[in-house]
Length: 118
Image 1 (cartoon, helix red, strand yellow):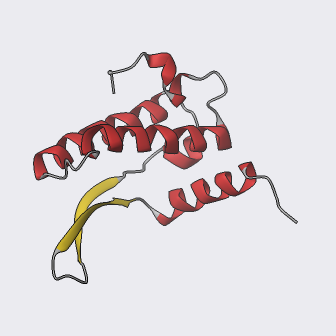
Image 2: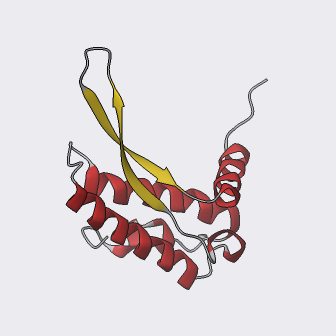
């Protein structure tokens, strides 16, 4: 997480509280996963390093009390999953595992942040 200045991260933003913190967290989480597992680096070693970075990111959000009702006591797990392709080969992807409660809070924050279309 130290490849960029700390002010680039969502947790460093002054308005990283409540629903906004959930949106910042998802951006930071995507950034960490891409940093460790992007560009086809889907090895077990890279996954282990990414998991450590995700754990540290979550701990940071708990530490700053960005949204205690969302982050306290939570864990986010990363796993490599494969799926068969029509040609008989397999494709690997990263699966993100979090509690249904945290996932629901994130989805609701994203819904509220999206402009409504009628």
